[in-house]
Length: 164
Image (tube, rainbow, N blue to C red; front, side):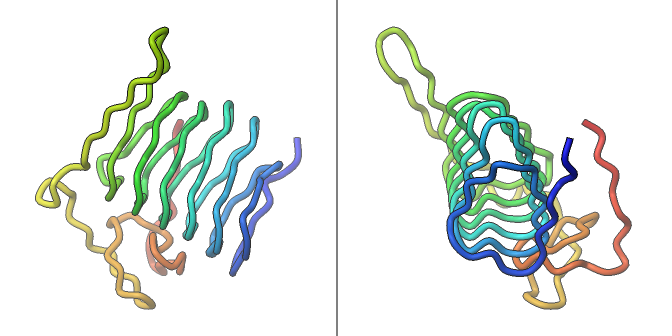
């Protein structure tokens, strides 16, 4: 098994990820996560994120576009500024995770395709965000290590431990 590739700084253009990646910086484009590949986003993806079957995405930062889950495993700890399209796989959202656009659930049936849309929780139901980024002034969840907007490391924050 190869170690995860770690990307800092700026990546330009759409990416079709064929190997595991940890993104600490910003991707100016969309990311398609191919089968068997894991993407961990601590920074920001400006475009869309597309999960193919059997892929995995851990979103701790932000996605400026929409997220399309075509059969992967999606874990939302950060922010999706666009819509969430669930067409298969599993989607798990932490209580502090956020989808600002609509959430679409698409079900393939014998009679065709059925789609339903819902909006996220009203802002009053969102948890209090207290870790403010010194670079872009974006409020983040209290335990955030990286800013959900610009990916800047929020110094002095403890490193969390992920337990699947």
